[in-house]
Length: 154
Image 1 (cartoon, one colour):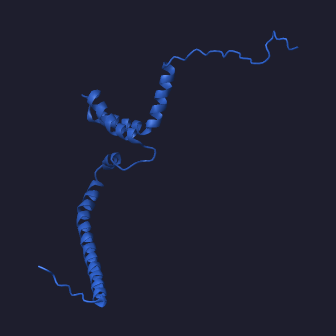
Image 2: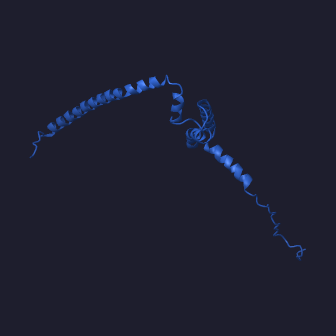
Image 3: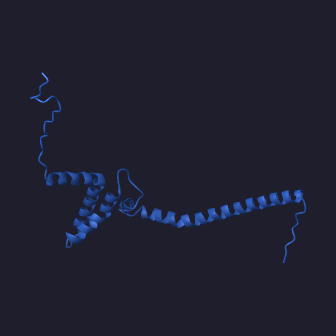
């Protein structure tokens, strides 16, 4: 089954090109409108949840843990900010009350925020310098390649 082309000459070709460009612009406008409608439908529940969470105390702290990036914070401080309170509460504060756990969580997050990989590596280097035995300092031998003292050059 062969489709007959209605293009017979150069003028018909140019007319078909302009018609197809106009059709493409119309379809792009339609898709843009549909995209904006879909985006508005998706954003409505998000805005509702965001406004509802703004009334919950402590929600900003939880959001701050999973936020993009803070200045001066690297992967180690982010991991410690999440993992340190969990480890402390599981291992050391098993039978502690809610207030103690909340206080330890807050303090450990603050401490983890101050700790980053540069500070940790500097601390480890200082400890290893203290532990590692210092080699005996050898005095360099005096090497004199000048005129030997018993030479007959005087």
